[in-house]
Image 1 (spheres, helix red, strand yellow):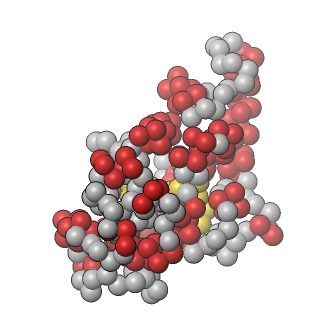
Image 2 (cartoon, rainbow, N blue to C red):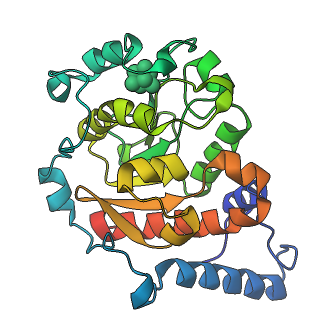
Amino acid sequence: MRWTDRQRAMLLEMGIRLWPDATSNGASEAAETQLEVKSAQHALTPPPEQERSATAVVLPTAADLQQAPVPVRDDAVPISSGLSAMDWPELQVAVSRCTACRLCEARRQTVFGVGNRRAHWMIVGEAPGEQEDLAGEPFVGKSGQLLDNMLRAIQLTRDEAAPQRQVYIANTVKCRPPGNRNPQPDELARCEPYLIRQLDLVRPRIILAMGRFAVQSLLRSSEPIGKLRGRVHDYRGVPLIVTYHPAYLLRNLPDKARAWDDLCLAVETVKTCTGP
Ligand code: SF4
């Protein structure tokens, strides 16, 4: 398969340069094919046995995913005894009124989540930054633009589309840490039940965990992203792919190519689970 003009534009938008410069001659087609094959092979080649973690899994079937709810974890801090029964409006109100951790003190507003609530894809980020705190929406500003470009490159959108093309986006914590500091472990733990309920309501076919704190929260792993990416993890029966946060990619351009590999792995994983 050749890159389409749109994919070509999106890869360039992500800072991934096709080499040699993409033209329509045969030589560049061959080079593009090589790049694509290398990318796909890298994504789909299983890691060496010694690198596999206990979380590497056999992918569930579509039927499995339809049947299995995402349960509340045993070690989650209960915010509300009724949280696990809340519907979307109730959950959104509960988050907007939450004072369960110190992050409520400096927030302008909570940042609940955005996207289709029946989306097949769920993107989990870290914590709101200044612009998210202002807008009340995750992934805005430059990192949001990069995320949207990455999603477009694999034909996904946070806007209106069929569920298989849509994403639901939520952060691990819903309030901005002052000065954009890292969220503290107790803050992550306090906020986690909201994310779990969002996952339970969306029932995604795949989760894309972006950034260290999303990964720490969902996989209970302190390993660096570089060691966790490149394979399929399991979050309560849902395949989970680890990748870099767009804000990190804006500062570390060479890792955009790895993020592209992660997106390719996610696409292949969804195809395996749900069919073409
Ligand atoms: Fe509540 Fe989460 Fe905000 Fe803390 S970060 S106050 S737990 S909504």
